[in-house]
Length: 443
Image (tube, rainbow, N blue to C red; front, side):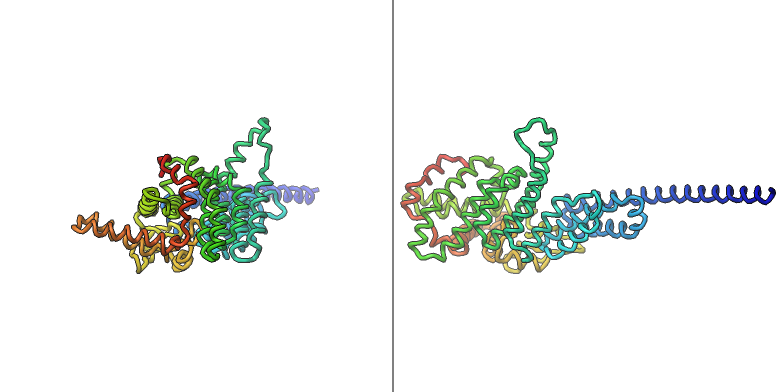
Protein backbone atom coordinates (compact mmCIF):
# COMPACT_ATOMS: atom_id res chain seq x y z
CA UNK A 1 0.00 0.00 0.00
CA UNK A 2 2.81 2.33 0.84
CA UNK A 3 4.48 1.72 -2.45
CA UNK A 4 1.26 2.28 -4.37
CA UNK A 5 0.61 5.51 -2.50
CA UNK A 6 4.15 6.64 -3.21
CA UNK A 7 3.70 5.82 -6.86
CA UNK A 8 0.47 7.79 -7.02
CA UNK A 9 2.13 10.76 -5.39
CA UNK A 10 4.95 10.59 -7.90
CA UNK A 11 2.48 10.66 -10.78
CA UNK A 12 0.75 13.69 -9.35
CA UNK A 13 4.05 15.48 -8.93
CA UNK A 14 5.09 14.66 -12.50
CA UNK A 15 1.75 15.76 -13.94
CA UNK A 16 1.87 19.01 -11.99
CA UNK A 17 5.42 19.67 -13.26
CA UNK A 18 4.33 19.06 -16.89
CA UNK A 19 1.40 21.44 -16.49
CA UNK A 20 3.64 24.17 -15.13
CA UNK A 21 6.14 23.63 -17.97
CA UNK A 22 3.44 23.87 -20.61
CA UNK A 23 2.07 27.00 -18.98
CA UNK A 24 5.46 28.72 -19.01
CA UNK A 25 5.99 27.67 -22.65
CA UNK A 26 2.60 29.07 -23.66
CA UNK A 27 3.26 32.39 -21.97
CA UNK A 28 6.69 32.70 -23.58
CA UNK A 29 5.30 31.87 -27.01
CA UNK A 30 2.56 34.46 -26.63
CA UNK A 31 5.04 37.14 -25.57
CA UNK A 32 7.35 36.23 -28.43
CA UNK A 33 4.52 36.48 -30.95
CA UNK A 34 3.47 39.90 -29.63
CA UNK A 35 7.06 41.13 -29.97
CA UNK A 36 7.18 39.86 -33.56
CA UNK A 37 3.81 41.44 -34.30
CA UNK A 38 4.96 44.83 -32.98
CA UNK A 39 8.24 44.66 -34.89
CA UNK A 40 6.47 43.76 -38.15
CA UNK A 41 3.95 46.57 -37.72
CA UNK A 42 6.76 49.09 -37.10
CA UNK A 43 8.68 47.88 -40.18
CA UNK A 44 5.56 48.14 -42.36
CA UNK A 45 4.99 51.72 -41.16
CA UNK A 46 8.62 52.63 -41.86
CA UNK A 47 8.51 51.10 -45.34
CA UNK A 48 5.29 52.99 -46.14
CA UNK A 49 6.85 56.29 -45.05
CA UNK A 50 9.93 55.67 -47.17
CA UNK A 51 8.20 54.35 -50.30
CA UNK A 52 4.98 56.38 -50.49
CA UNK A 53 5.98 59.64 -48.81
CA UNK A 54 9.73 60.06 -49.19
CA UNK A 55 10.03 58.06 -52.47
CA UNK A 56 13.09 56.28 -51.10
CA UNK A 57 12.44 52.90 -52.68
CA UNK A 58 15.76 51.21 -51.89
CA UNK A 59 15.48 51.98 -48.17
CA UNK A 60 11.83 50.91 -48.17
CA UNK A 61 12.76 47.60 -49.76
CA UNK A 62 15.34 46.99 -47.01
CA UNK A 63 12.60 47.37 -44.38
CA UNK A 64 10.36 44.90 -46.25
CA UNK A 65 13.24 42.44 -46.52
CA UNK A 66 13.68 42.65 -42.74
CA UNK A 67 10.04 41.60 -42.34
CA UNK A 68 10.65 38.54 -44.52
CA UNK A 69 13.80 37.66 -42.54
CA UNK A 70 11.96 38.05 -39.23
CA UNK A 71 9.17 35.74 -40.37
CA UNK A 72 11.64 33.13 -41.64
CA UNK A 73 13.68 33.23 -38.42
CA UNK A 74 10.52 32.39 -36.44
CA UNK A 75 8.88 30.21 -39.06
CA UNK A 76 8.47 27.06 -36.94
CA UNK A 77 6.74 28.87 -34.10
CA UNK A 78 4.54 30.96 -36.40
CA UNK A 79 3.49 28.08 -38.65
CA UNK A 80 2.60 25.99 -35.60
CA UNK A 81 0.72 28.60 -33.55
CA UNK A 82 -0.20 31.42 -35.97
CA UNK A 83 -0.25 29.97 -39.51
CA UNK A 84 -2.64 32.55 -41.00
CA UNK A 85 -0.58 35.44 -39.66
CA UNK A 86 2.58 33.90 -41.16
CA UNK A 87 0.94 33.50 -44.57
CA UNK A 88 -0.88 36.84 -44.81
CA UNK A 89 2.11 38.86 -43.58
CA UNK A 90 4.42 37.13 -46.04
CA UNK A 91 2.02 37.81 -48.91
CA UNK A 92 1.56 41.46 -47.88
CA UNK A 93 5.33 42.07 -47.69
CA UNK A 94 6.08 40.22 -50.92
CA UNK A 95 3.29 42.11 -52.74
CA UNK A 96 4.94 45.40 -51.86
CA UNK A 97 8.36 44.07 -52.92
CA UNK A 98 6.88 42.86 -56.23
CA UNK A 99 5.38 46.31 -56.78
CA UNK A 100 8.82 47.88 -56.29
CA UNK A 101 10.38 45.38 -58.71
CA UNK A 102 7.79 46.27 -61.35
CA UNK A 103 8.44 49.96 -60.78
CA UNK A 104 12.12 49.26 -61.45
CA UNK A 105 11.10 47.12 -64.44
CA UNK A 106 12.70 44.04 -62.90
CA UNK A 107 9.82 41.80 -63.98
CA UNK A 108 11.86 38.61 -63.79
CA UNK A 109 12.01 38.90 -59.99
CA UNK A 110 8.20 38.96 -59.67
CA UNK A 111 7.69 35.39 -60.93
CA UNK A 112 9.50 33.54 -58.07
CA UNK A 113 7.86 35.89 -55.55
CA UNK A 114 4.40 34.86 -56.76
CA UNK A 115 5.30 31.16 -56.86
CA UNK A 116 6.54 31.26 -53.26
CA UNK A 117 3.38 33.03 -52.07
CA UNK A 118 1.26 30.58 -54.03
CA UNK A 119 3.03 27.68 -52.30
CA UNK A 120 2.28 28.95 -48.79
CA UNK A 121 -1.44 29.53 -49.40
CA UNK A 122 -2.08 26.01 -50.71
CA UNK A 123 -4.42 24.03 -48.42
CA UNK A 124 -5.33 27.13 -46.44
CA UNK A 125 -8.17 29.61 -46.55
CA UNK A 126 -5.76 32.53 -47.04
CA UNK A 127 -6.25 34.09 -50.48
CA UNK A 128 -3.71 35.53 -52.88
CA UNK A 129 -4.05 39.29 -53.26
CA UNK A 130 -5.38 40.72 -56.52
CA UNK A 131 -2.43 43.09 -56.89
CA UNK A 132 0.17 40.34 -56.61
CA UNK A 133 -1.74 38.23 -59.12
CA UNK A 134 -1.92 41.12 -61.57
CA UNK A 135 1.80 41.85 -61.17
CA UNK A 136 2.59 38.17 -61.79
CA UNK A 137 0.54 38.11 -65.00
CA UNK A 138 2.16 41.36 -66.10
CA UNK A 139 5.60 39.82 -65.49
CA UNK A 140 4.63 36.79 -67.59
CA UNK A 141 3.56 39.11 -70.39
CA UNK A 142 6.67 41.31 -70.37
CA UNK A 143 9.15 38.43 -70.05
CA UNK A 144 7.49 36.60 -72.95
CA UNK A 145 6.50 33.56 -70.88
CA UNK A 146 2.90 33.98 -71.96
CA UNK A 147 1.22 35.62 -74.92
CA UNK A 148 0.77 39.28 -74.04
CA UNK A 149 -2.93 39.60 -74.76
CA UNK A 150 -3.82 36.21 -73.28
CA UNK A 151 -1.99 37.23 -70.10
CA UNK A 152 -3.82 40.55 -70.05
CA UNK A 153 -7.27 39.08 -70.57
CA UNK A 154 -6.69 36.21 -68.15
CA UNK A 155 -5.50 38.50 -65.36
CA UNK A 156 -8.11 41.22 -65.70
CA UNK A 157 -11.02 38.88 -66.37
CA UNK A 158 -10.09 36.77 -63.35
CA UNK A 159 -10.08 39.80 -61.03
CA UNK A 160 -13.28 41.11 -62.61
CA UNK A 161 -15.11 37.78 -62.25
CA UNK A 162 -14.05 37.31 -58.62
CA UNK A 163 -15.57 40.66 -57.68
CA UNK A 164 -18.42 40.79 -60.20
CA UNK A 165 -21.73 41.92 -58.71
CA UNK A 166 -25.07 43.02 -60.07
CA UNK A 167 -24.80 46.80 -59.94
CA UNK A 168 -28.56 47.09 -60.25
CA UNK A 169 -29.18 45.23 -57.00
CA UNK A 170 -29.35 47.82 -54.20
CA UNK A 171 -29.65 45.07 -51.57
CA UNK A 172 -25.90 44.39 -51.70
CA UNK A 173 -24.27 46.73 -49.18
CA UNK A 174 -20.74 45.65 -50.12
CA UNK A 175 -21.14 46.93 -53.69
CA UNK A 176 -19.45 50.27 -52.97
CA UNK A 177 -16.42 48.64 -51.33
CA UNK A 178 -16.01 46.22 -54.25
CA UNK A 179 -16.14 49.05 -56.80
CA UNK A 180 -13.65 51.02 -54.71
CA UNK A 181 -11.34 47.99 -54.62
CA UNK A 182 -11.49 47.57 -58.40
CA UNK A 183 -10.81 51.29 -58.82
CA UNK A 184 -7.80 51.02 -56.50
CA UNK A 185 -6.35 48.48 -58.94
CA UNK A 186 -6.66 51.02 -61.77
CA UNK A 187 -2.93 51.95 -61.96
CA UNK A 188 -2.02 48.25 -62.02
CA UNK A 189 -4.49 47.60 -64.84
CA UNK A 190 -3.03 50.60 -66.66
CA UNK A 191 0.39 48.87 -66.64
CA UNK A 192 -1.00 46.25 -69.02
CA UNK A 193 -2.15 48.99 -71.39
CA UNK A 194 1.29 50.63 -71.24
CA UNK A 195 3.06 47.38 -72.10
CA UNK A 196 0.70 46.70 -75.01
CA UNK A 197 1.53 50.14 -76.42
CA UNK A 198 5.25 49.56 -75.91
CA UNK A 199 5.04 46.38 -78.02
CA UNK A 200 2.85 48.11 -80.65
CA UNK A 201 -0.13 45.82 -80.09
CA UNK A 202 -2.60 48.54 -80.94
CA UNK A 203 -5.75 46.44 -81.44
CA UNK A 204 -5.22 44.63 -78.16
CA UNK A 205 -4.63 47.94 -76.37
CA UNK A 206 -7.88 49.36 -77.74
CA UNK A 207 -9.78 46.18 -76.87
CA UNK A 208 -8.40 46.25 -73.33
CA UNK A 209 -9.40 49.90 -72.91
CA UNK A 210 -12.96 49.26 -74.10
CA UNK A 211 -13.36 46.23 -71.80
CA UNK A 212 -11.66 47.36 -68.60
CA UNK A 213 -10.84 51.04 -69.06
CA UNK A 214 -13.62 52.18 -66.75
CA UNK A 215 -11.71 50.81 -63.74
CA UNK A 216 -8.64 52.85 -64.71
CA UNK A 217 -10.91 55.87 -65.16
CA UNK A 218 -12.52 55.35 -61.74
CA UNK A 219 -9.05 55.39 -60.16
CA UNK A 220 -8.74 59.04 -61.36
CA UNK A 221 -5.48 58.08 -63.10
CA UNK A 222 -6.59 58.72 -66.67
CA UNK A 223 -9.90 59.21 -68.50
CA UNK A 224 -11.25 56.50 -70.81
CA UNK A 225 -11.48 58.84 -73.79
CA UNK A 226 -7.93 60.03 -73.28
CA UNK A 227 -6.62 56.45 -73.13
CA UNK A 228 -8.24 55.71 -76.47
CA UNK A 229 -6.95 58.99 -77.93
CA UNK A 230 -3.37 58.27 -76.81
CA UNK A 231 -3.43 54.81 -78.40
CA UNK A 232 -4.96 56.00 -81.67
CA UNK A 233 -2.63 58.97 -81.91
CA UNK A 234 0.46 56.89 -81.17
CA UNK A 235 -0.65 54.28 -83.69
CA UNK A 236 -1.09 56.96 -86.33
CA UNK A 237 2.28 58.54 -85.56
CA UNK A 238 4.15 55.23 -85.67
CA UNK A 239 2.31 53.37 -88.43
CA UNK A 240 1.30 56.12 -90.90
CA UNK A 241 4.86 57.01 -91.85
CA UNK A 242 5.38 53.44 -93.08
CA UNK A 243 2.47 53.66 -95.53
CA UNK A 244 2.51 55.02 -99.07
CA UNK A 245 1.01 58.49 -99.38
CA UNK A 246 -2.33 57.33 -100.82
CA UNK A 247 -2.79 54.79 -97.98
CA UNK A 248 -1.73 57.39 -95.46
CA UNK A 249 -4.44 59.75 -96.72
CA UNK A 250 -7.04 56.99 -96.32
CA UNK A 251 -5.77 56.33 -92.81
CA UNK A 252 -6.00 60.05 -92.06
CA UNK A 253 -9.58 60.22 -93.32
CA UNK A 254 -10.71 57.19 -91.33
CA UNK A 255 -9.05 58.17 -88.06
CA UNK A 256 -9.33 61.95 -88.07
CA UNK A 257 -12.93 62.22 -86.92
CA UNK A 258 -12.51 59.55 -84.29
CA UNK A 259 -9.30 60.92 -82.80
CA UNK A 260 -10.74 64.43 -82.88
CA UNK A 261 -13.92 63.34 -81.09
CA UNK A 262 -11.95 61.49 -78.39
CA UNK A 263 -9.58 64.43 -77.82
CA UNK A 264 -12.49 66.84 -77.45
CA UNK A 265 -14.50 64.37 -75.38
CA UNK A 266 -11.62 63.91 -72.96
CA UNK A 267 -11.16 67.68 -72.65
CA UNK A 268 -14.86 68.11 -71.96
CA UNK A 269 -14.89 65.41 -69.26
CA UNK A 270 -11.63 66.39 -67.55
CA UNK A 271 -11.25 69.56 -65.54
CA UNK A 272 -8.77 72.03 -67.06
CA UNK A 273 -6.43 71.88 -64.07
CA UNK A 274 -6.46 68.06 -64.10
CA UNK A 275 -5.53 67.89 -67.78
CA UNK A 276 -2.71 70.39 -67.51
CA UNK A 277 -1.20 68.77 -64.41
CA UNK A 278 -0.56 65.48 -66.22
CA UNK A 279 2.52 65.85 -68.47
CA UNK A 280 1.58 63.04 -70.87
CA UNK A 281 -1.88 64.54 -71.43
CA UNK A 282 -0.35 67.91 -72.31
CA UNK A 283 2.00 66.23 -74.79
CA UNK A 284 -0.93 64.50 -76.49
CA UNK A 285 -2.67 67.85 -76.91
CA UNK A 286 0.54 69.38 -78.26
CA UNK A 287 0.83 66.68 -80.92
CA UNK A 288 -2.81 67.09 -81.85
CA UNK A 289 -2.51 70.86 -82.24
CA UNK A 290 0.60 70.49 -84.43
CA UNK A 291 -1.05 67.85 -86.63
CA UNK A 292 -3.79 70.41 -87.34
CA UNK A 293 -1.54 73.39 -88.09
CA UNK A 294 -2.01 73.11 -91.87
CA UNK A 295 -5.38 74.77 -91.55
CA UNK A 296 -5.93 77.85 -93.68
CA UNK A 297 -5.02 81.37 -92.57
CA UNK A 298 -4.92 82.30 -88.92
CA UNK A 299 -6.34 78.91 -87.92
CA UNK A 300 -3.12 77.15 -88.90
CA UNK A 301 -0.88 79.74 -87.24
CA UNK A 302 -2.85 79.61 -84.00
CA UNK A 303 -2.60 75.80 -83.90
CA UNK A 304 1.16 75.97 -84.38
CA UNK A 305 1.54 78.55 -81.61
CA UNK A 306 -0.72 76.47 -79.37
CA UNK A 307 1.44 73.37 -80.00
CA UNK A 308 4.64 75.19 -79.00
CA UNK A 309 2.96 76.68 -75.92
CA UNK A 310 1.70 73.21 -74.91
CA UNK A 311 5.23 71.78 -75.17
CA UNK A 312 6.36 74.55 -72.80
CA UNK A 313 3.55 73.61 -70.40
CA UNK A 314 4.57 69.96 -70.73
CA UNK A 315 8.12 70.76 -69.63
CA UNK A 316 6.91 72.90 -66.72
CA UNK A 317 4.51 70.17 -65.55
CA UNK A 318 7.24 67.55 -65.86
CA UNK A 319 9.62 69.59 -63.71
CA UNK A 320 6.88 70.32 -61.15
CA UNK A 321 5.90 66.65 -60.92
CA UNK A 322 9.49 65.46 -60.69
CA UNK A 323 10.68 67.97 -58.07
CA UNK A 324 12.92 69.97 -60.42
CA UNK A 325 14.40 66.78 -61.88
CA UNK A 326 15.89 65.57 -58.60
CA UNK A 327 14.22 62.15 -58.98
CA UNK A 328 14.57 59.26 -61.42
CA UNK A 329 12.55 60.05 -64.55
CA UNK A 330 11.59 56.38 -64.75
CA UNK A 331 10.34 55.52 -61.26
CA UNK A 332 10.57 58.80 -59.27
CA UNK A 333 13.17 57.33 -56.86
CA UNK A 334 14.74 60.27 -55.03
CA UNK A 335 18.47 60.85 -54.81
CA UNK A 336 20.19 60.09 -51.51
CA UNK A 337 23.78 59.99 -50.29
CA UNK A 338 23.67 56.20 -50.34
CA UNK A 339 21.93 56.03 -53.74
CA UNK A 340 23.01 59.01 -55.89
CA UNK A 341 21.28 59.40 -59.23
CA UNK A 342 22.87 59.24 -62.67
CA UNK A 343 22.59 62.46 -64.70
CA UNK A 344 22.13 62.53 -68.48
CA UNK A 345 25.33 63.96 -69.98
CA UNK A 346 23.42 65.44 -72.91
CA UNK A 347 20.87 67.69 -71.24
CA UNK A 348 22.25 67.72 -67.66
CA UNK A 349 18.65 67.81 -66.47
CA UNK A 350 17.19 64.29 -66.40
CA UNK A 351 18.28 61.77 -63.76
CA UNK A 352 18.08 58.00 -63.46
CA UNK A 353 18.36 55.65 -60.50
CA UNK A 354 20.05 52.93 -62.57
CA UNK A 355 21.47 52.24 -66.00
CA UNK A 356 18.50 49.97 -66.81
CA UNK A 357 16.04 52.86 -66.47
CA UNK A 358 18.24 55.02 -68.67
CA UNK A 359 18.29 52.36 -71.38
CA UNK A 360 14.60 51.49 -71.16
CA UNK A 361 13.49 55.14 -71.32
CA UNK A 362 15.80 56.08 -74.20
CA UNK A 363 13.46 54.86 -76.95
CA UNK A 364 10.09 54.73 -75.15
CA UNK A 365 8.36 56.65 -72.41
CA UNK A 366 8.13 54.47 -69.30
CA UNK A 367 4.96 56.06 -67.94
CA UNK A 368 2.68 55.70 -70.99
CA UNK A 369 4.50 53.13 -73.09
CA UNK A 370 4.56 55.40 -76.15
CA UNK A 371 7.56 55.86 -78.45
CA UNK A 372 8.60 59.24 -77.07
CA UNK A 373 11.74 58.38 -75.18
CA UNK A 374 14.50 60.61 -73.86
CA UNK A 375 16.31 60.30 -77.18
CA UNK A 376 13.70 62.69 -78.62
CA UNK A 377 13.32 64.81 -75.50
CA UNK A 378 17.00 65.32 -74.61
CA UNK A 379 17.56 68.46 -76.78
CA UNK A 380 14.28 69.88 -75.48
CA UNK A 381 15.36 69.39 -71.86
CA UNK A 382 18.70 71.05 -72.60
CA UNK A 383 17.08 74.14 -74.16
CA UNK A 384 14.50 74.38 -71.37
CA UNK A 385 17.16 74.09 -68.64
CA UNK A 386 19.23 76.90 -70.19
CA UNK A 387 16.16 79.11 -70.56
CA UNK A 388 15.19 78.43 -66.94
CA UNK A 389 18.71 79.27 -65.72
CA UNK A 390 18.66 82.49 -67.78
CA UNK A 391 15.41 83.57 -66.09
CA UNK A 392 16.65 82.67 -62.61
CA UNK A 393 20.02 84.35 -63.11
CA UNK A 394 18.52 87.50 -64.71
CA UNK A 395 20.81 87.14 -67.70
CA UNK A 396 20.58 89.85 -70.33
CA UNK A 397 19.97 87.52 -73.28
CA UNK A 398 16.79 85.89 -71.94
CA UNK A 399 14.92 86.54 -75.21
CA UNK A 400 17.60 84.64 -77.10
CA UNK A 401 17.19 81.59 -74.85
CA UNK A 402 13.40 81.79 -75.24
CA UNK A 403 13.72 81.89 -79.03
CA UNK A 404 16.06 78.89 -78.98
CA UNK A 405 13.63 76.93 -76.83
CA UNK A 406 10.72 77.74 -79.15
CA UNK A 407 12.76 76.60 -82.15
CA UNK A 408 13.61 73.41 -80.30
CA UNK A 409 9.91 72.85 -79.55
CA UNK A 410 9.04 73.05 -83.24
CA UNK A 411 11.98 70.78 -84.14
CA UNK A 412 10.82 68.30 -81.52
CA UNK A 413 7.32 68.16 -82.99
CA UNK A 414 8.22 68.20 -86.66
CA UNK A 415 11.48 66.21 -86.83
CA UNK A 416 11.98 64.27 -83.58
CA UNK A 417 8.39 63.05 -83.42
CA UNK A 418 8.21 62.93 -87.22
CA UNK A 419 4.93 64.84 -87.46
CA UNK A 420 6.13 67.06 -90.31
CA UNK A 421 4.95 64.63 -92.98
CA UNK A 422 1.93 63.39 -91.03
CA UNK A 423 0.01 66.64 -90.53
CA UNK A 424 -3.61 66.46 -91.56
CA UNK A 425 -4.42 68.00 -94.96
CA UNK A 426 -5.93 71.47 -95.00
CA UNK A 427 -9.32 70.26 -96.21
CA UNK A 428 -9.72 67.97 -93.20
CA UNK A 429 -8.70 70.67 -90.76
CA UNK A 430 -10.97 73.30 -92.31
CA UNK A 431 -13.93 70.94 -92.64
CA UNK A 432 -13.92 68.93 -89.43
CA UNK A 433 -13.78 71.48 -86.76
CA UNK A 434 -10.49 72.84 -85.53
CA UNK A 435 -12.54 76.01 -85.36
CA UNK A 436 -14.61 74.37 -82.64
CA UNK A 437 -11.47 74.32 -80.52
CA UNK A 438 -11.59 78.11 -80.49
CA UNK A 439 -14.86 77.76 -78.60
CA UNK A 440 -13.18 75.49 -76.06
CA UNK A 441 -11.47 77.50 -73.34
CA UNK A 442 -9.04 74.65 -72.70
CA UNK A 443 -7.45 75.31 -76.09
